[in-house]
Image (cartoon, rainbow, N blue to C red; front, side, top):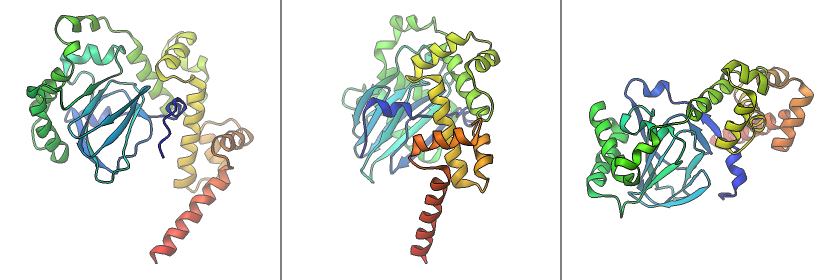
Length: 292
């Protein structure tokens, strides 16, 4: 069952959707069997519940959502959606902060992690967009300009507190958004290399103490802790999906020695890398036997 204590937020993954949003401006899809891992990205995410009851954990807030409800999640905010209801479904829209330029400063301000959408209180002009957005998530049935317009209208309706004169206070955005994006991308692209604080700070031309402060403040975990968990995650995928040796996987995941890799892996997973790989091989054999 779902564990909702704060520590789970530390086990998040970074997803970069930049390339996918280039052509159309927005990635949209409908999903069932909803059971996500904690994740974040440098893009904005709008989730609308289409059917069933769906739970969400966004930053430190727990939400219970019904059909027509949803949430607009700003970049670099840790979140997940899940539901034990097999018939539940959500519609997801992911787009860059500049796709809807009127709200770019708000999205990047790092002042508000998310905005909840209540179907019962959502103004009718905004609620009217939901049906068309839901259809779009299934078949991309309308053009880029139209989808941008509908998202603009919906977001305008669910964020009345951040429109008009009060919205102007977000014009003076901080540099945190871009720094966070660069940090996450650099770690992803250099996971097998030296990722000391000094090396990262030098590569990004940022003062080391500021790198550490920005990371811990935005992601609620230390930079070293995130890198360690990321390396274990990379190693687990290689153990299951490749035939590389344990030694190759250790160094490809960024560990300085086999001894260090074995110790960290056991601390994280409760078993050695070899045992972890073997457990998947046994499971696959059982599935193969059952299918035969």
